Image (cartoon, rainbow, N blue to C red; front, side, top):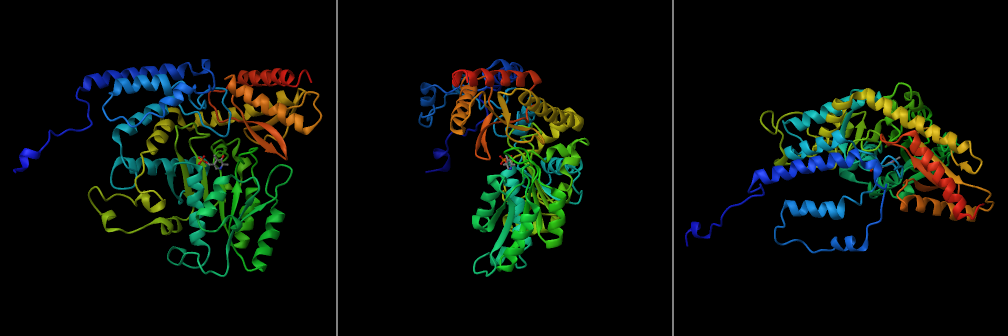
Length: 490
Ligand SMILES: *Cc1c(COP(=O)(O)O)cnc(C)c1O
């Protein structure tokens, strides 16, 4: 049998008719602009009806349904049920808003489909440029290395991995951690984000290797307690390697005394990592940067661009002050990854030598595009605006005796509850939980919840460029109305 008799008609994934797909593409772009333009008129969130959930249980499509049909289904079953974080009254967790220009940049990077692992092509240079801009914007040392990652969790992992490989005093890359007499320990406050706990566990230190230190009345790490803990651990044969400082805790936006932590780490020869997932970003503003004094001294810094820089998901950044330690932690030689001095595999040091991932998307383009589109000044103004809006909400709460503020507002996070005439804690918790659920289910607003000193708190984290002060007027009005309704006029 000759080869030609078994040769099938060759095919690919490009459209059979480019004009048809082009038309659909134009319609999509138009639809999505209208969608974003009018997003404030939609409910913040709505529950997915059971029949729509059923559609998500359909088996894998065997036959082509076509792009037009897929788009119709997207319109019917997917688009009406977003998280809500693009809406002006969404303040749950710390979820960024994205932007219309960012959406277009995603289209461009989707078309190029470059892999950012390394090589001599534009995506690599754009990422290098963006990292350099971010260092300038935050006031972090220019000699630092860095890479874009999926988010703050991965950025914390990268920083802590470099700490773990650099500080123990033996070659962790070859020797690992097994059979070592001195267990490594890492320090942070009780307010530190769970991604730090996760990273410490995955790096083989065990959650027992993470010492969570008490906080003061402003939810900042007690540096005196930290000092005692490190001394006690050294005395008992542990090997302290790293302190994690918070630049903006997830609960209340508290900022640790980063200068005191930097001093302490220098005295004690410890790695100083800062989790600044959202709270590092105010350093771009000359007016707010003093709040973060000491952050520029961190040995590694983790922050997100998809939270308080309003970039589309997902993109975060890890910076490391010592490029050699950074590279030593992740670089790997493999024949199939040989870099060259010329050709496609030439160019600068590969990004895959600075992180866990090899294939990586072209995340840098949306960062580059957004900063070009709006300029850093716009981001400075927006971050200041969010902080001022949080103060405004704080004033509304403080000005009404039916409401109670549960934590200071150092940045953009506001924790409060309805009190009315309620007396006991259990009822207050029930009522506030119900207020929160009804706010979300009615589609009016989406704060989230947390617990502040055993008190149930309605929590607003404002990283939203679409929010206006009136949106907080609406929130407060609704909380008061629902509080009175649920507590039967109390
Ligand atoms: C969101 C957040 C993280 C995790 O970042 P992701 O981008 O969600 O992975 C870490 N620390 C703090 C303080 C955060 O707010």
